[in-house]
Image (cartoon, rainbow, N blue to C red; front, side, top):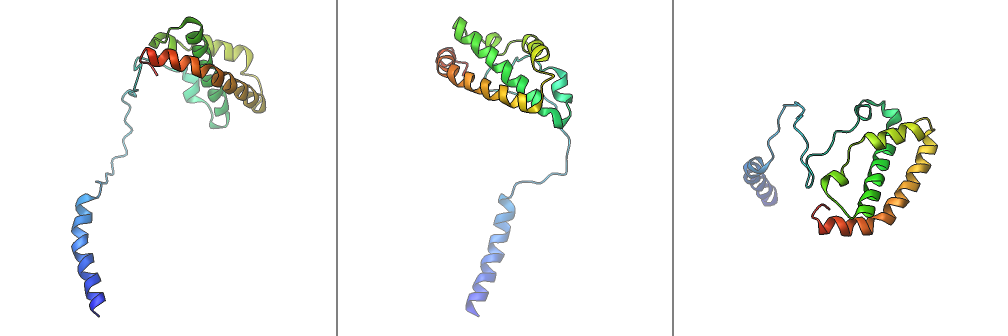
Length: 139
């Protein structure tokens, strides 16, 4: 009986403490459309609109373009030794044009194969790009 009374007393004392430390719950489901803030280079060019409007079943196309975009930027960084925001995050036009010209009509399996190849290229570029960008404060 003593254990039961002791357990009830603890529960009664802990209740207000838990209520005070619980995060506030809100019914506000408004989407915050403020621009995303990044750790570096907040003035990034906007992605092509088709990437945001694509059917979820074709999201692999947007993922492939993002991979290609990063590879092309990293190749430029490694080649020029410049990791400024304009080099690290260039306009999407060139990568988007290359993607539509060479890859857009391929199957999902072919996209996956190209992405695997691009990931390998990125892994090989990373050490030199990281060194350059860390030295310039953009990693």
